[in-house]
Image (tube, rainbow, N blue to C red):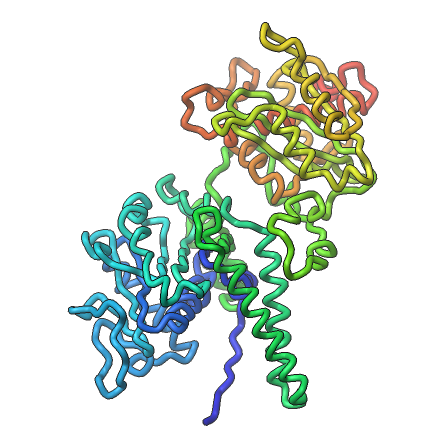
Length: 557
């Protein structure tokens, strides 16, 4: 028997999908990024191969979408992997009896909604416009494309509960009850549920899996090398088995509500696939598509900004950066407790031995905290954090989370520069301490040395509006440029991008209505985090330039 080896080129997000191979995978990728060609086709065929006679549900908004847009590119991708129609899979018809293929565990009376796989597995086509297709079904996996069009409530009520059963047969596999969902960037609120899947990702666990999977591939490659000796192959076979078991367990999880298994969420623009598409195709789309359509479907940009907002010069791409300490991440062993690197040791932008600057916002619904350090060329906002009042969290909880995250930095420098304005100075009949006093006392209790910096009343909105224009434009050397760690400050950037502005006469005013009780805007999306950042930057540079009232003087000069 001759085995033909085919090389397949993968772009970066496709490679990550293969390396991570999570139990649940969600992707928001731009047009022609290779969603179906790789992750959907690979994961669907993988699940079918691992679970003979099982059932995968292929879900879409409409049945026409399945037949017209979902299945044709999926079949093409399967064929690229070597699966042939009529030999390895059959569409809406049973395999010829001469192939002696077993029936699925739940035998279908009518094959019209099924795709039969070579080992008895079936793909069952489910659409939301044909009611009842998911009723009384028992699925072992779910695959869906263009999920921004799905009615998520209907999916949660009809399809998600069907992804159950057969644990006695397949429960030991990480692929059992796997979920694969992809789409391009949602443009309506009804489709933005998938963006929230990013909150389910355990990045520390993902890093572990990637590291182990790479070593696994290396050992398999060595095992298959013709010069590898027999004793070495015996040793490698044992190691490969152990690594496979470890990967399976990390991906599978315990199966409980607290540990459903490994989750991966990714975003990618069409530019990731430029080596396949070519520059001409991108330029063609630039000419043919409206700007907002190009931004969303090609560049995969979130439509969460306020173009004429209070921080309208802020550009998350230009003013943002990513930074990880991979020396620490790479040093992690195979069996480490979960969450070990959910702290500052993973941050490559943190300067050891240097004090941390912090500022806060003290709203009842949300307590916000931002962290910064001054760099030679710019002021770096390293992190943003928040705790929510409706989760029972209070101000000391916010300080505790900060202290826990930066516990290892405290060994090199335990100094905190705490900047606060007049909003932290109030007391009432139930509290004799000011909010600033509470923060400082808690920091000291946690082993920090605190330098208090009271900045008084904040400059009026119009002064700050013009200040941020100068800071983010970076045309005047008087103002220190600002940069943000995009991953750590994601929610801060959302808050700032969504902060609106209006004018009274010639004065700019920040829109604060989203902070009111009863607002439909989540507290973390409202201006609170941005308010904390303003306090941090203004506090840090309030007297830096030697002016009596430097901000007012500088932006009006």
